Image (cartoon, rainbow, N blue to C red):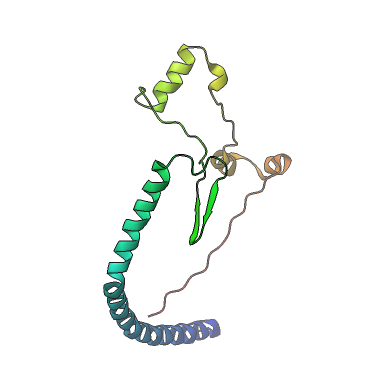
Length: 153
């Protein structure tokens, strides 16, 4: 056999042996961690549930109380602060069954300024059928990476 075959086999054997040793130690600790997590969850469950209820009540209080955020987006209090930020507006379907219907309605009412036409390069077609010289002219190149892998026993 060739020298590289012997070297590769020795490395694969050693990698496999060490991976098995690591797996044994990891499984032993994983069982201990799982038991600790179980105890941790049991000990903190009451407080976690109470916090979730209080946070829900606080959010409800902020949304139901007018004027809290009229002057500032943040209200500083003795034990913390409350803040409100508007998210960017979004669109929801209202009366139209899908976005294709909306597109049809825009065309029907001649509101073409609100129709987006998107032009993008067809990367798949460029990779499959364009020559390297043509790719160079448009400023791209085809890159083919080689990924090496191994399996040990």
